Image 1 (spheres, helix red, strand yellow):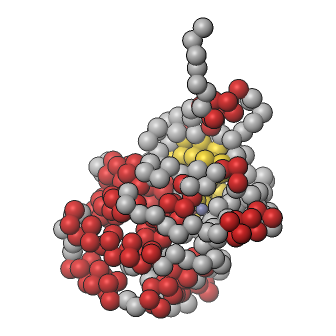
Image 2: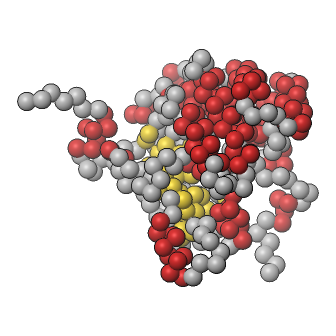
Image 3: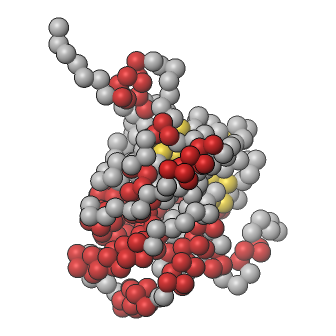
Length: 333
Ligand SMILES: [Zn+2]
Ligand SMILES: [Zn+2]
C-alpha cells in the first residue's frame, strides 16, 4: 500500500462538515502573484493600465523587501489577552505599531525608482515629499488610514504608506497559527488585525472548494463567510449581484454576461453598500486586491445605481473635495 502524507488541508477535507475558517497568508505568496495579476489586468485594455503597472511595481517592491524583513511580533501576553476577549490578535487601529514600517516605506520607494516604470514629475515630487516627512507626520497618516478618516488621508501618498504597513502585517500574520485566531463578534472584520476586507473570492480546490473567503486589505488573511450574506452589515436580505457588462446588451445577453462574469459586485439593500466577489472557477488567477483595484468601471456602475463601497480600496482613496463627506446619501433626484 502506498504511503500518503496528508496535508492539514487534506485532512480537513475528509470531514465535509469542517469548513476551513481561516486561510493564513504565506509570506512570499501574497505580493508576487498580486504584481503579476496587476500586470495581467493592465494588459487587457484597462483604462487605468499605466496606474496598474505602477502599482505592480509597488507590489514587486513589497515582495523584495519582505524577503529580507522580520517584524517585531506581539508579546505572548498581548496574544493571550486578545484571545481571551475575542479581539484581533495584532490590531491595526489600537495596537502598538512596529516603527520599522517607516524604513520599509523608504525601501519601497528606492526599489520602485530602481526597477519600476520611469516616474512622472508628480511622482518624483511625491516621493521627495514622502522622504521628507518626519515621524509624527508619517504616523499621523498611518493613523488616519487605519481609522478611515477620509479628510485626513492624503490620497496620493496613501498607497505607498499602506504598502509599507502591509509588508509588516503580512509578515506577522504569516507566522500565526490559524488555530490561535479568535472568533470576533464582528464577522466583517479581519480576526487577525481588525481591518476591513478588500473583496472576497469564491475559491476552488481542496478544502476551500466552493467556499467564499473575505481577504483582509492589510494583512491578507482570509476568513470564511457564507455566501449571500452582506460582509458589511451581516444581512441576508436584499443581496444582489451586478456585473460591468456592455451597456447596449439586451436582457438575454445581460443574463449571459452575468452568468459568465468572474467578477461581480455584491450589493446589499439593507446598508446600501457593495463589495466585489471573484469567482475563481471562472478566472483562476483572480486576486481580490488586484481585481478590485482594476475594476473601476464596476465601481462607477454601482455608484450610479446608488450604492457606495463598504470600505475604500487600501490603495485608492477618494479625493476629498470641500463638503464631499456631508453630501453623501443626499438623494435629491
Ligand atoms: Zn488583517
Ligand atoms: Zn449590508
